[in-house]
Length: 113
Ligand code: FES
Image (tube, rainbow, N blue to C red; front, side, top):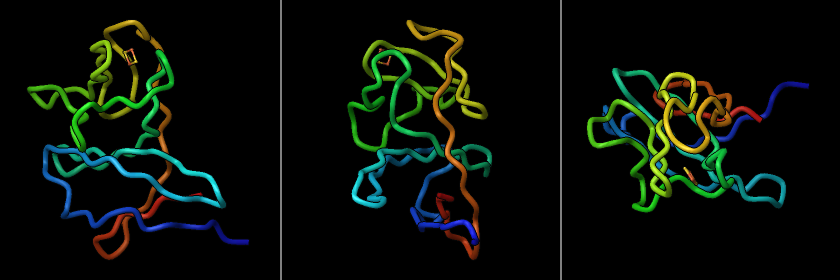
């Protein structure tokens, strides 16, 4: 059986650097996630902070710090590396965001289930 894929965004609808949050319905449940693009590289994470399991954003689609160098949780200021989701500052230091598998085909980003 082949792996199921769901289209979640067009690659060019995300600014570089930039981020976008969205919610995807999967088999009756809702998965909250966000996409980050920096230096043409895409990363996709579950929108759940390791500190409280709540969403990271207060402002829609805003997941990066002011310098666009880290993913930032708006709740208590935790900073995460963009490439691997590792928390390097804040109450969940050394914990990580949950990375989600994706693939890019024909300019679209697909979540792999
Ligand atoms: S909820 Fe993210 S740092 Fe506290």
